[in-house]
Amino acid sequence: MKQGFTLIELVISLALVVILSTVGVLGLVSFRSSQSLRLAGQNLVVFVRDAQQKSISREGGAEWGVRFTHIAGGRDSYQLITGPAFNPAGSVVALPSAIEFVSSYGDLTFDKSGLPTGPSSLIIRLTGNPAMLRTVTINAQGII
Image (cartoon, rainbow, N blue to C red):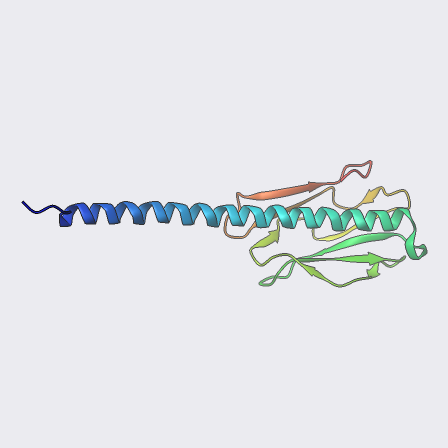
């Protein structure tokens, strides 16, 4: 009597391996996307806090803020602004290609006490999964 695997046993085993591999890869892609969104949110918080601190310390003798830009068909971005006319004061930081602003285009500025004037919440989301989003809130007391 021969010992070994039949063709049906091999096909079933191969199908199970393919199914498990697919589930694993999809889970990894979803995890990576959520981590990218989390990191983009953290970077945005740090950037806004930096603008707030520059405004409180009156760096350059002016108030500071952040300009949020949406480019149709392009990557959304943000940039430091300063002075009475709130002119650009730094390089443009583009969001990762799979992430976009949901709303709050325009300027978020801070007065000399660090209180915000502008949007009170910034929402970013994954372009491929609009249900996966992250909100950065700035309350009236300037807490981010």
